[in-house]
Image 1 (tube, rainbow, N blue to C red):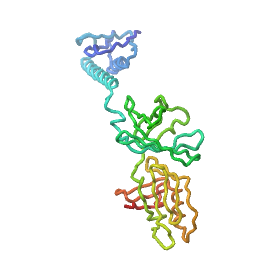
Image 2: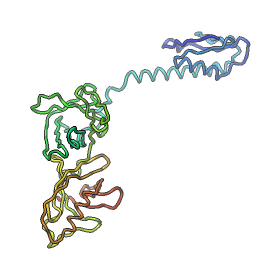
Image 3: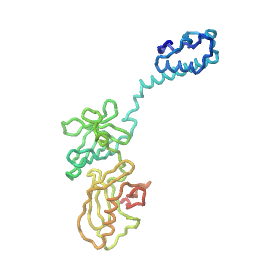
Image 4: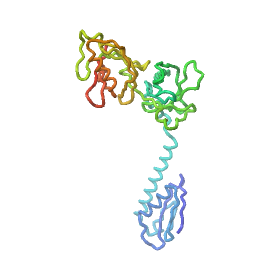
Length: 326
């Protein structure tokens, strides 16, 4: 039993290989392929004593009882495999430098999410990356304060063009870093490395559609029933989702209301911390139904012309429908 160690390089491709038998026995094509595959995988190949291996620049049709048909097939297989191997190595070593997050992704837009907080229920965060290289960031500490902390500044791409650094105006603090992915921003640590630990997956902001933000929406239907003005309604029920304050506000037909909202991928939406004034009106049915819809909705849909908004629960019938006020 002998061992054949591989030595395959660019110089090896023009060589011919033959596996021959000392006892003039039949050498199968599968045995030849086994030797070739072993060499291509850069592994030591075991060769039984009754076989011997010939490497030569020229074919040796009479050097062993292997037929020319099998020799030709082996040579073709070896050539194709070596060429594929070399091509794979080249593509691995030379990735396309033009393909990166900066020029391959539609990264401008609004990203929102709730980031982990040490002394509150979560940090409601919204970051807008603008086309001119500026950004706006707004945060609110949920369950701790209703204050919106707003900052702005310029962002720049890192050296690999896979993430951005946010430089806040008038701040001497190091720039915050985020990895830019497909419709998401992933917060990194101060050295630009991924955050680790049990909460690592929560340091992610998702890109949301801005079609429903900063629009005055008039309630036209609730629980499948049309909403009509009457003598008992003080105001038309409506809603506005403000991107700067990250709050939903409006009137339920009698009392004003406001609260937090959060948008997530897949047209998901949720409302929380809703408050309202406490005036009494003759008919509170529309207002009560609207408040219930806001507390139940988990997704939204908007029509093709972007002038009708529906708040939904799962795939059931819309809980509330609004028309855009032009």
